[in-house]
Amino acid sequence: MIKIQDLNINLKEFKLRNICLSVEKNEFFILMGPTGAGKTVLLEAIAGLIPLASGRILIGEREITRLPPEKRGISIVYQDFALFPHLTVLENITYGLRFHRIEKIQAEKRLDRLLEVLNLFNLKERLPVNLSGGEKQRVALARALMVEPKVLLLDEPLSALDPNFREEVRGALKSLHQSSNTTFLMVTHDFVEVLSLAGRAAVMNKGHIEQTGQVKEIFEKPASPFVADFVGMKNLFKASFNETYAMVSGLKIEIGRIVDPSSHYVAVRPEDIVISREKFSSSMRNNYSGIITQINNQGFYYEIAVQIKDVSFKGLITKGSLIELGLEEGIPVYVSFKASAVHVF
Image 1 (cartoon, rainbow, N blue to C red):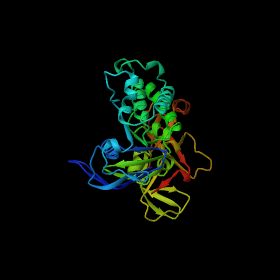
Image 2: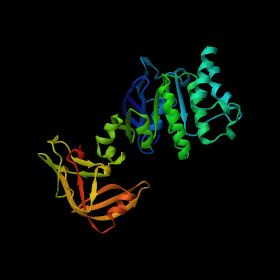
Image 3: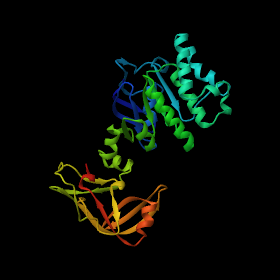
């Protein structure tokens, strides 16, 4: 549905370089990356709000590179809702119909469906000032989808909401996508949103795309040190390789397979690290003794840093397990992980 070919953008202090991206029809695709990576710039370029230096943008087989925004069949929703304050919910939702030719019966059916899916029937006559943040965002989504766009662009639509509203609108987004023929392209840095909404994603960094693929693949098999760090693979080390093991600062790590000799890094997700008070006897081929150097409260989990020779590993553990094992800084523990949990790139 969306094809971006060799796109380049030159702004005063920022550039997008050689962006190539393909999003399938009716797919829910997410752009990830840190602040300043270029995610919103790319979104606005697709919408026609930022001029290209070079490259092409296609929606289906139709090239839209030089078309004005209103001719592209694209709607965009920002995190600040951008509702008209003097119009009611119903007037906001139907505002775009004056610019798009949609049969009255079809428009009425679409309106009823959006009001139902987004739970807005009882809010139709309210003004935006009388709505909660979650309600405003649901109205903004209804307004964007009312004109039947081929593509819906979402620029961090949940980031300004508190946790309860965020979960509510995330559920609405999922329902909307499943019940429409619209292709969703969303910008976010929230991993919960990525894992619950998207099938595929791309990671951007400093104006270029680092990796594109299935969400599971990006989180489990990052293609670069940047992606590994971004998706929370905190045990990331430069390594040398010999047959089926890696050497990291004198520490031998079994990886269980022969790897590409051009590889330079190994990484292990913290949730794949097992921390115990006694030596772990199992199929895990990597077992080491070390000293706990730091315990950080991460909310639902504690992050435990364990020093093994010159290497510091980080693992996650529940509060219950922390208390049960009697873990404290300075005590000896064992660290274990499977060879299959070691990612090489």
